[in-house]
Length: 223
Image (cartoon, rainbow, N blue to C red; front, side):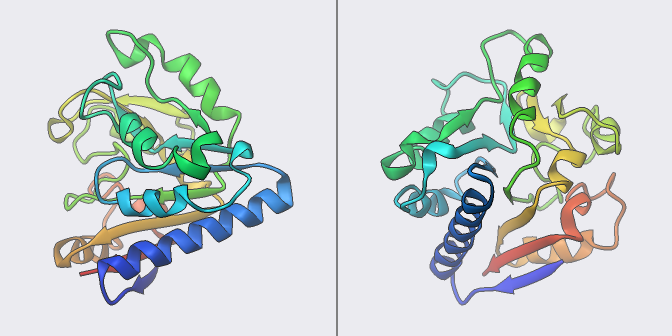
């Protein structure tokens, strides 16, 4: 992995947003369209805020989450809700949202149609991931019920995932989809996560799922 260290978190968010915007612009110029996959949670929020104001041909950009909790957008735990509030606004309001949730009791009920929607935008042009201190990324949690299937080279595009650390059932992009992205970035902050990602480099993916993307990833870090 390539590790880029920033002097502080503000510089990290600005620098990472600039890199992502440049890569999306290059993909749009080369292919006429681009896809961007991003994490939920609060950490990438400032990156979203910056990107939303960047002048790109957003109408030809498909935006999808790395993973989503199986909750509606009215839930404060909805990652889709966060995307709408902080990324799909201002200049980026015209981007196409590719959903990872649809109203149904369980992910399995709508998984096939959600996967079909994602398939149209693969491979991902620019992938931004986060990582937990347990070395999970997307909803690939150590100990999750379908982790081995999600890590397999022939994994389907999407899988439902249930894990003690996950809370609600989730839907996640699988390892082959993440690893085949044309450009891969990981955003982490703090000493604990830096130590974790360095440890992950020497562990098997079942113990450190982020391992599946590390070889080709640029890690962006600030204390």
